[in-house]
Length: 122
Length: 110
Image (cartoon, rainbow over all chains, first blue to last red; front, side, top):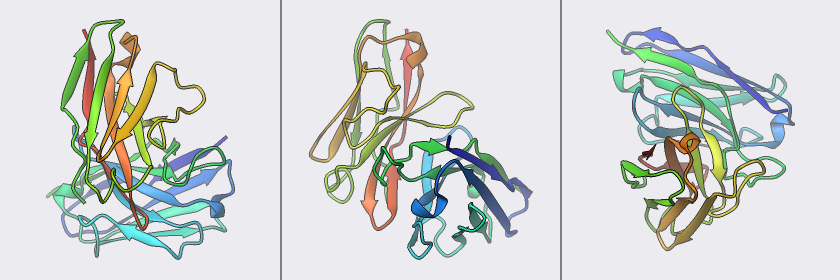
């Protein structure tokens, strides 16, 4: 069974940095791209970043480009999101999501974690 | 990377059918057959309901169906039930490891 568990959320001030982690289990981690999706309080879903299975392919939403870095450690089955220069508008629940599965194309999010809350406020 | 456009809210009585539209551009919805739909209940993670525009994951009720025409995708819920009351989001692949979500639609069962 696929299991995704995010951690690392917290309360920070503007300009600070934070690293989120997503521990994955139940599948061959290195075979699948992974993504981060966030949801500000009371707002909709926003795609943040995706990384290929190998880690060599990445992309970011314009709203975080240059400030956030996605990475993965396939030996530890863990996905990361390094967030720098945090702003109030980065306040959100951050979900990690698996891209595809044996039964689903890579361009789909069939599995999600429970999310971790990041609050940025002065 | 503009969000796909969805109606803010749609409502219907139990047993009725409703349709949620999702309008994008020729760079996302119109260019790829990778539109998916997610259901989200309050405080919960999103759940995949439709993928590749019209395919249903195992375990998802056949009351949910999807379609796409040009730059617009649609989700139809037939035989509306109380448990269908939730927020629904469309999502399209937009190339080179990028995605765009819709603005979200709150479905209310009257």
